[in-house]
Amino acid sequence: MNIEDYRKKVFINSQYCNYYNESNGTVLAGILRNIGYKYSVVLPEEKLKTISAVYRKFTTVINSVVALEILLYVYLVVFPYFTEFMKAPFYLVVFGLSLIPLMLLYLTYVGINLLYENYLTRYVGSFKKVKFSPSIEKLDEKNYQEYKSTPRKSIYVLIAILVIFCLYAFIPLYIEGLNKSKKYDSAIRVSNSYLFFVPISPKVYANRAYAEFKLGNYEKSVKDYELADKYSLSGEFSDDILGAQTYYLDKNEMLKNFDSAISAEKYEPMKYLLKYEKATYYLKNKNYSSALSIYNSIITDYRNQKKVFFSPALAYYNRGVCKSALGDSLGAKIDKAFAEKMCPQCKFNADTTLVRMP
Image (cartoon, rainbow, N blue to C red; front, top):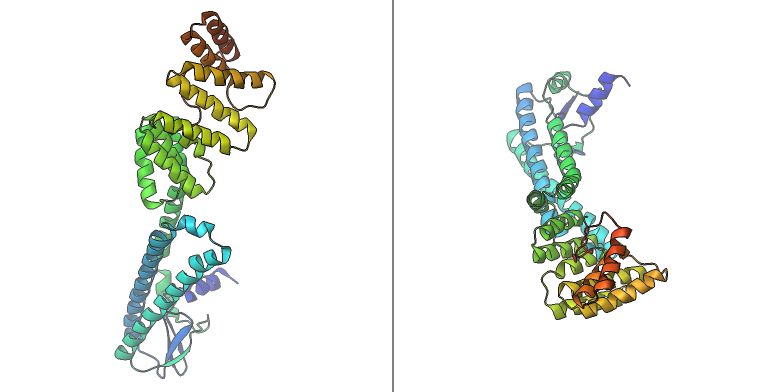
């Protein structure tokens, strides 16, 4: 097939090819392209031009209606019930996310096609329904040449789709970069805009949560981490939630949360991190004896070569802070010196290590 025949094939399948002439009459295309309307005479050129213009208006209407239906379906059904769909049996997901909208779209095409049939009956007259089957041999050469010289609206549509896809794919990475650059206000603003259009992105919720946390908006941070957990369907942000809660929850409630998290954690090394965080929470609240007891326990296990996830240097240093507050100056000096030797670059403090940069 040469390039010209290929172009003609493209033309045949486009909305610009909406009629062809046979020896015994003209066949017009329906909005449903498999349907044709045959007239017993060859229609005059001027009438065909008018019909072609109206046909393109109808196709613009159907494309607009279909786009609107898809957007409404996404924003009124898919996004609000996303987690329910993901937890439902596979066959229900297939039915809900494909068969139902496809049926609605088909009915829309049928409805618009009936309106177009009504227009043809009024403007041209009665017709016989046939299969619309244009071919290179049947196409109108003048109509084809006009098509070749017409600007392609589809190019602009493809460019728009490409731009939307790039924005969808790369904005989360941009937000992550803003957090790494400590531009937390900007990260929140861009996240707000993105989530307005895509309100089910766990990665963006997690990045906004981190930015809120760094700005001291701890309750907002927890809400965003909970949404990230919800839409990721994984529970991977539960530790971040726990870490952010340490900055604003009532002490007794927070200690219950720590105990529940430690009890529920099945991976032993992770239990040590949660115990370390509980000790650090005691330290921040100046309950030095309780903090010291936990630090002693987990450091002993670390020295016995148990697999742990917490930073030994931080644990030693914080134990030294507890010893100092309880009057053990020598023990405090030894622990702090050991911690600084283990990690010369560390900035020692009692901040949580549970909240991670996404």
